[in-house]
Length: 406
Image (cartoon, rainbow, N blue to C red; front, top):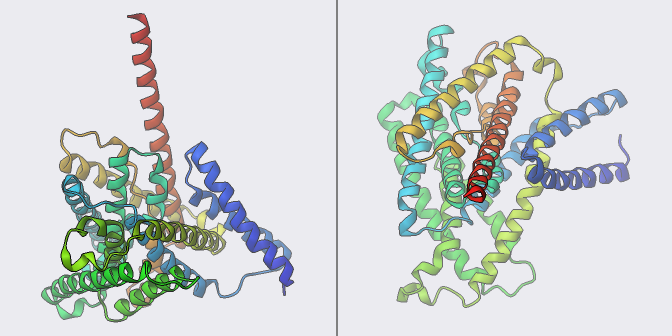
């Protein structure tokens, strides 16, 4: 058994290394997620050589992943402003998220149905996790984008997570029939939105009036409890989280309403700013340990299998081709190139694959394909972003040269 002091050193080292990775990521344009996963793989190799191992990884991964998902969606929602000018952006992002899951999921499910003779239900359950864009990867990586593109990524990836989870769990209850599934989704979204609105207003009322030294952490874990309760009731818990974040960051737009004016404390802006900072800090820590443990749980032998590479390659080709076609269709005449690459798979894909019941899993599916899909999509996003920035820089440089000549 490892000595306690060595464990504390290891935990501290992981957090400090993650902070260093974030600093490096801003320079080399490679998301820190890749470095965290690689670190986890390296830790696994070193611990195997030393004869050590981390217990309960299979239990820790879903817990950290779910907590991270709640915090990431909340963190993203706290950055979004609901204005009249943003309505078109929100509509396009929502449509892109829904169609992205639908079209990509259908093509992957059709391939499983025709080539592996799987029935359509099992094929859709297996395909859905790989059709979802990961907000855990996309939102932190969007810092380099222009403001409008960054908002699109936040909306689209958060909604992709939400719609993906809704579809996945609706498919698990598909024995009720298609109409019952659609009704469950619609009612779940509606009720979850209402719960989120009420929780958001409650937090607005409390956040500036609680004088205790500890204020924000109980609120965050109250929201996590609401997420867990909504999940048990088969609602749409991420919708609740998104609604809470949007209300906290946009409540100032309804200050003129008499019934809400007394609810909003005078120092709300400062308190919401402090709440944002705490959420970002907690998100950083949870996200760090999730992706390191994900790397630790990866088998190098599985990654080396040809079947894993061919499966992951097929998934990535389908995912990015669908994205190109959809963005061109949804945003005709606009420059969609910076957004083309932002379709990474990550935390939510891993969580849904882990949550798939054994009787609905693909027989013989190579475990390494999951990790290769995650890493491959992140690398494509990184390389695409780097190429776009280089192309943009070259264009600006050429324009400057022409100006000097004139």
